Length: 173
Image 1: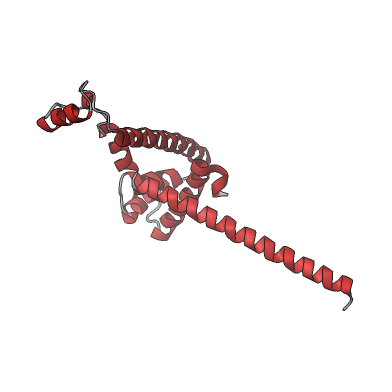
Image 2: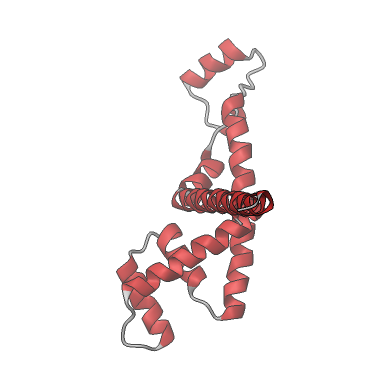
């Protein structure tokens, strides 16, 4: 083998190894984005509750002895601001607003494609329905006797991937 042939083989091998590494890294990013999407969806209702009920200052709550003591200790004006809670509430509200917008986009996409993916996603994560119940509902909608639960899992997996792309953008590609 000549020196030139060795260089060509080495270059080709290096490029293949590099492309494989890039593909593995992309797969890790896609998996991470999908896992994070699933976590957000699993906690969606709790995150909304946090936004609605988190008390970030004493003006948002009913006075109690503890609040009066805390207000006196921390803020002589009586406007106790618990910055960690307030910051968490703001961040959570921003995340929920983004998720809600992306869910709306996805709902429209699925309606346009006559896809059940959005329904399955919402039923499973937001409403807490089990796969069997969802399969029965989708079967009724489609006018068929029954649907295999594996079909519902495929719908759900596709919905998670689609929504990951909407929520995380290029990180999910």
